[in-house]
Length: 374
Ligand code: ACO
Picture 1 (cartoon, rainbow, N blue to C red):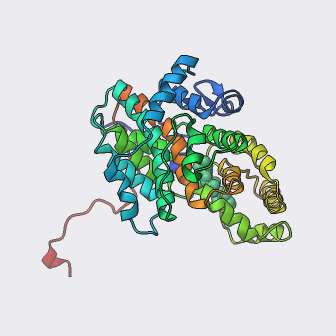
Picture 2 (cartoon, rainbow, N blue to C red; picture 1 turned 90 degrees about the vertical axis):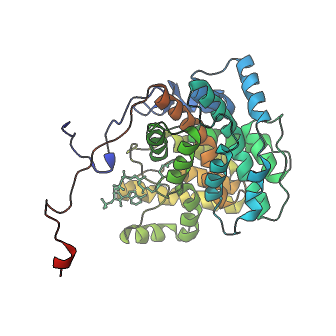
Picture 3 (tube, protein in one colour; picture 1 turned 135 degrees about the horizontal axis):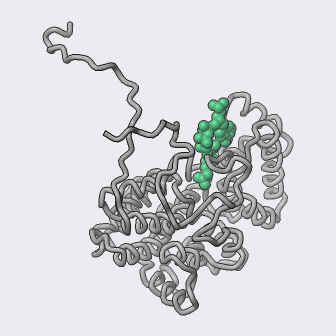
């Protein structure tokens, strides 16, 4: 038997495999490109292409990709019928999980694990996930779904499908930057879950369903939905300081702070914060930003802890008038690019992921027959 490596709680610091998709050693880089550079010089569509296909697209490649994705922005009728059939209280992220699972039945490549089929499925899911999120959101609000537009990019089309009005350039850019920052992050919990699933030679849809399940928790993607709860509980600039001290004294976790990998700050949070500040154009939004600043100051000085990406993302989406239950699904409609890239990478060079456990149970003992157990 192979001698196990030393145990690290939460697998902290454990290198669980190689990847050529992203690195966190020198700020976050996707295939060598710094995320800040990508936010300035590329769109989410280009970044999704980079992650799924391996290189930034040339103009013609981007055009072909955008056309394929735009054409795939529709759902089979039975998947659409799921939304009105579900209880009103269904959580949007759970509906996304269910709908992605249902989509597998309609995808003719579903069981094909070749590189080419996985790329085709990745592009389709990239196109379909925003449709699921927007359609179910509107149906739940008693509104008619709005057909996707083929002339808009990922971010603009999503805002169009949600609202049915032409999105502003500022909204599209802010959303696009947030989606670029959410797109990929090496072996985070949901991506690792996806890799574990396909390492058994399961398939992309199954991996994405599992990844959505892992993303849901508030220690991972669910945190962006909790950020406004934190700010509302803090009450505003006048009460934020006392509230934060009291919450820390109660040993509460302040959602949107801390990170397993980044102990001195998350570069993504710093990038997106500028968009929150620019967006804070009303006294109420400026108050949320001031409240956030106060909490950040106390977290840094008292806990040596800094915001992660969810901290500005929750505020930005709120400032854009997007409803809170959309935030984690929006994370998913970006991270699908990273999940798919990892599934493709795993299957291109697969070995079953099967670690060992540190046994902490009862010592070896004999089975006492039922009649003698008292
Ligand atoms: N607020 C207050 N205290 C915290 C926070 C926080 N946000 N995060 C960690 N701590 C404390 C813990 O209570 C613990 O204290 P203790 O040693 O006194 O028990 C200590 O810091 C270490 O915590 P761990 O959970 O062991 O740290 P880990 O590196 O495993 O956790 C995590 C990382 C899960 C992100 C954590 O910081 C957290 O729970 N943050 C809040 C949730 C969140 O924002 N998640 C989003 C992650 S980023 C993303 O998905 C884009």
